[in-house]
Image (cartoon, rainbow, N blue to C red; front, side):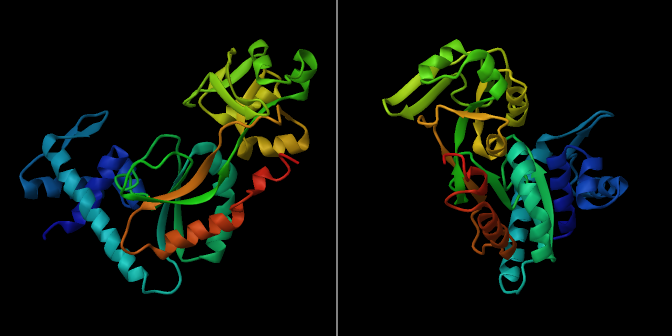
Length: 305
């Protein structure tokens, strides 16, 4: 069992792509991380990382070791969960992953209140639009609208996620207001680059399902960037209500084709399946449901009035 303490260090180096980044995550010096990895390599009699002046990467031996090291770190977390389940107040480090825009607008504002209620918890919030592996990347919970694919994960529904079609009053004044989805073929439509249906926009309305091929001169991989373009009068776009809601309420954007609904999905809290659900994870999810509003989230209030 010699060197068990080196396992989390190796996992941190592999996850963060270098000694310096791993040191920052672990709260130790870069030299301490380098020393632990060197000691581990000497003890194993194998090189675990290729090192150059620009980057490091796992060797074949390192990749094999990492598989089991990750499982060991996860098992250690399970053991901690079992103990914390017997304790009173939620406590410990909580790693949360969330998409960039939703995290900035609706998760980050929750943190101060959550930490005030649970002062023994330490939050590590990572906002990232890439798809993450919760276990491999060391997250306790992810707030996401993505479909759940892994059977080893559990998802709890937090709130509905709706999108609306909108444009600025200035754009409508200059180009007119569409009254049917087919009218969009005559407008400059802006696109979210990561959307699965990108230019094919689907609506459900009084005349059933309508599918429109949209086109325009601007796309972006961030919904807040699209919002800025809309407010600037560039065109028409689909925006999540968690972004567009305040602008519609303030009159900066106009909700178009209100009788036609765009496809919706749900917002979930996703977390690894565990024998003991950590009290800190349960506390965070319950707090999010409390603040968001499960049936009608606060960002949707007034959108369809």
